[in-house]
Each structure stands twice: as structure tokens, then as C-alpha cells.
Length: 170
Image 1 (tube, rainbow, N blue to C red):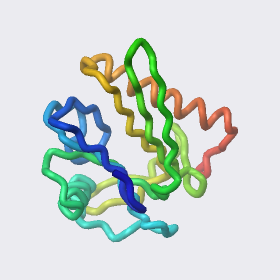
Image 2 (spheres, rainbow, N blue to C red):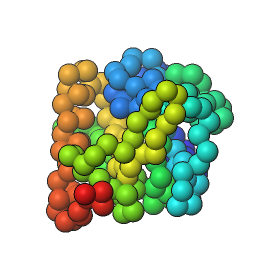
Image 3 (cartoon, helix red, strand yellow):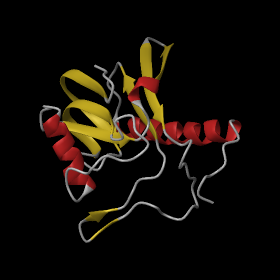
């Protein structure tokens, strides 16, 4: 499901999901959907948070969207309409990647000073992100799934390097 501000993957039942999300992140066996939500609503600024913490904000985003509590999601300043979708097949397995990137105005890199923090119930502003939703059409053991996350992270770094995109922070 995709609209102007939301990309939603709904599963037929619960699935194993590895997520870096604040709400229901980590490795979970009980999630029925994942989402990527455009928090800027097509503007160049961040929307008003729904809670004082990212965990609370993302939980409330799921509630506002009418999702069951067994969800996890990411937020992005990138416009969902600009999503890139890639699919590949190997040995009977299909892998689909849905990517949003918002690094053109505030993208950073490893080693830049931190620009995100939560302290005393107050959120800082997030820097540029590249969010990936990667779907395998088969069961992937937790260890292999974790290795796939590392490979995806390396691929994001390689893509930025190949495009010669410098940090806009440092």
C-alpha cells in the first residue's frame, strides 16, 4: 500500500522482522506490518511530533494510521512518491527493496557530530536518512537476516561514495 505519505507492507500473518526502528525494533517474530512514513508531508520541515520520544511518536503514528499494535516503522523527510523499488531473483528467492533517500539537504556520514538525541523527554531533529524496506519471499534465519542488514548498510555507503555525495554536516 502506498499513498502520498505512507508506504505500508502488510503480511498475511505474523513475520520475523529485523528493524532499526525505535518502536518494536530489533528482531521480532510477531509483526504483521512495517511502514515508512513521510514526516515532512512534502514540506521541507519536520512535522510536529506526536510524543516527546521517538518510541512514543512512532507508536502513535501507527495508531493514527489505524495499524495493529504489532507494527514497526521508520520515518523519513523524503517524499514517499519518490520511492525507488528494485527486485531481484536468485535460486527461487525474490528480494524486493523499497528505498527512500533524504540526504540532499542534510545528509551526514559516519564520523559527523551527532545531530539526533533524546534527553529528558525532548527529541532532537533527525539528519538525512536512507530508509530501506527489504522483503524476502522466504523464511530467513535471524543470523542470515542480520548479515543482510550489514550488507544493505554497506551498499548504502557504497552508493553514496559512488555518487560522490559529500557530508553536508562536515
